[in-house]
Length: 101
Image: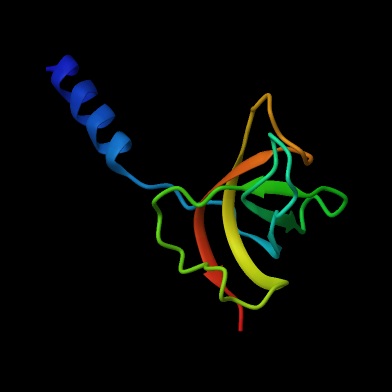
């Protein structure tokens, strides 16, 4: 009986989505520098005010386009990605994004 309860508990906890850590940030605009490790959108999260990260919008639709006006204030939930080829303080993956109007 205990193994069945344990399996059910693992399944239930695995399906729960945790509340992410939301941080205010500024999208500075697209990185238009011409180098091998440049590109993406430059992001300054308020929890790391002296850093600028690169973010590549990969398939997720956060409704950020080149037609937007930058800098743009947003709220994000993000993770830092360890990459070897970057031209900033690091690369981030944004899990959730909300534009602040």
